[in-house]
Image (cartoon, rainbow, N blue to C red; front, side):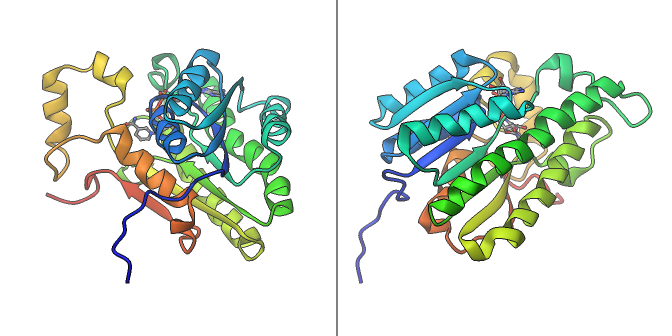
Length: 261
Ligand SMILES: NC(=O)c1ccc[n+]([C@@H]2O[C@H](COP(=O)([O-])OP(=O)(O)OC[C@H]3O[C@@H](n4cnc5c(N)ncnc54)[C@H](O)[C@@H]3O)[C@@H](O)[C@H]2O)c1
């Protein structure tokens, strides 16, 4: 028996990243190190370029495009870009979400949430994932299959007094994920949801005090908060052949967020 260890094999896999924030950039860097070919879209072209740079710095191929995930024409352009650049699509990582303070900060409770915040959150966080899915699947089927990874959140499980629309969209994505697995699994498409807990991205590191960190750590049975690489490792496992028998699942990578003390 071989004792050789290996990185998840993503060499030459064509993977579309819909969203390019902190967690996506860490994932792009590792996918690049594995020799993947990436097309990365984000509302912020600067974020998309930064994630593509991180992948290229590690030896991968990557192209950045501007994307509004809530707009089908923009999503179609992202998928068309992957097809024209690399000729097929093996993986799709849906990771965009509008967590800016001006949106998430107004995402309150069922009585008070402004309906425009509710609708915008559904358009981006949930309908956006449908739009990328429906654009990518025909190409994946033509290529013999593919892996779709949808980023959800621990917010689905913990039941919070605020951030209603956020939790509802993330819960909705779990149903979308299971639908995809059920509908196209026998044709070679896998779909799984990945639920991060509190992960300190570079942007968050800049905005959080030591007291806030300590308070957050006190809510989980662990010795540290999450790192972007914790999420990237699982995303890549699910995107690679190592995850070939994981289908329709919601996997938490959260340091134990939902454990009782
Ligand atoms: N960081 C955490 O602790 C954490 C915890 C649980 C879940 N998550 C989830 O992980 C994912 C990534 O989070 P992150 O921390 O990297 O956040 P982030 O804000 O750095 O990344 C989200 C990205 O989505 C992009 N985006 C927003 N609206 C868009 C649109 N209409 N079209 C295209 N792109 C759009 C933003 O520009 C941003 O780059 C999100 O889905 C988030 O809900 C994060």
